[in-house]
Length: 401
Ligand SMILES: O=C(O)c1ccccc1NCC(=O)[C@H](O)[C@H](O)COP(=O)(O)O
Image (cartoon, rainbow, N blue to C red; front, top):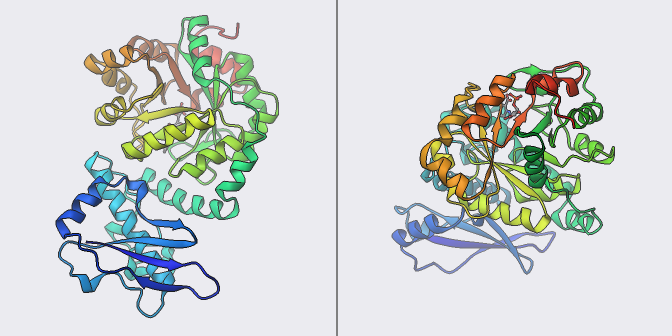
């Protein structure tokens, strides 16, 4: 069954009252749960009242409806947060998504102390680096949101300059050079490779890339795992770089899209291994409203098929790096573009971006032959003393004019 627990937000005393018992049967709830978008479940605020969707298993009876008991509001909220995370994972799993979105505060029985000291179990420990990044991102975004609520970001956007045409720049570069348009990545470090460049000056690198013929730039903004920042993105934008900018971030919440736009992004990345279809559709809608392009990243056939089923996709990135294991194999791009999938992509006039592990002109020729019209490259060019010349080395010719 689905119960609603309402919490009046009248400070200083918060009070709970449970809604009348619902007549929804367990079986109906199960359907309700499955038909709800992952992002629609959870805490809702309307007319000063916070409503918490309280769902329980089909075997529980009405009397077990979530009751905050003796006013332990915070605990009840955390329990709900945890439940919402679990339901998100349920929806995601039906789409083959293995990355779990679990509130990192841990399951309810661990609410007695900090997460870092938890007794580790399969359920409360990230299974791979991507999951770890996503769990960390959930906490980071929650904290950032508190400091800069959405309405403030929206106000800031009233005076923001228009975005640059990211997709148009890639198409133009392809037409101009006959080679895949380059998205050159401003990347200081990565979990798989460690520090790539000690003397890292983001503006200098961005300007060198632009001079060297990059169509667009990708700026890593994650601090913990990539040593990037939103300050870098903003600084590059304000330094007069003309290339459109991709905010290379792990997006788990629409708030981040608004934030990226306020910091000068022209495009954002959505990772299909992390986001269920409905979240991708929703975020694409937000991007269209904000004038941003979306690069939707896939790594395997299942993710590609999911993304090809979504309307309005203009750019698909095929990552040759498995973000769970770090294994890099550029034949992944070829594999995902073979047969009907490639056909569908051509029919829809989608630009495919080959991502990761590209080092030589042969690599570029290989992915171009497979069907990509753009490439996203970091390591091989950022490591060169002159990253602009690195581009010439990568393509085997000067593509700057
Ligand atoms: O690069 C990593 O180690 C990594 C680890 C976990 C999640 C994402 C990661 N990289 C993001 C990327 O996909 C690359 O930065 C991008 O495609 C450029 O790759 P490369 O040219 O190989 O630096």
